[in-house]
Image 1 (spheres, rainbow, N blue to C red):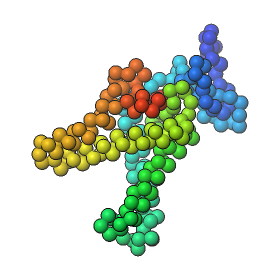
Image 2: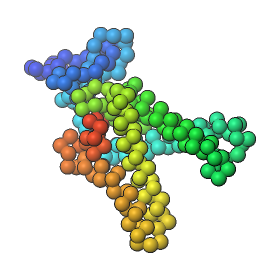
Image 3: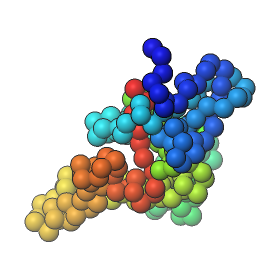
Image 4: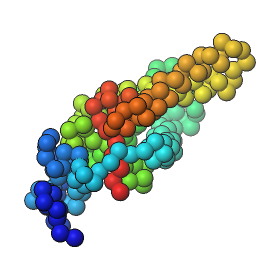
Length: 213
């Protein structure tokens, strides 16, 4: 189909992705420039659209399962150093702190390296969505650290809330569980009030999640 007047030329095969520039036809994602044949080229702003809640939650669930597998393997690596014994606060002392830091680093690498390299975790790739900055450029390390820190805090609070609700026997414990869940739930519900379908986390970190097709 011929291009309409004013349309940006379609990227040709054999071009590599480069950061999009604000105000350009590729500001909604990554534009293509001559390179080494990498075909990771984004859509034009007119073709891109925000990812919906269903896709985002499905990708998050998929990534959560993958992360559990990564943390499990990370734990197996440490077992030879503990004689095959579980690492617990009562028995391990300082090793328990080191173990938690190790798991946090694995989670950090799992998410942040994917966000920076291609804007997609494996779960996001499966559901055809991509994370990028508001200006269309890929995330930098500082962006990834900020998003991981805030997103991790929301996730820990939500999981803690579910744990509290699971064993709640009093009104006060149920109220505590709900209070812990509210920040994460409110962040996603904000999508329906934001013109760009961004969550509160997206706004705080100046990012957006786009649907690729």
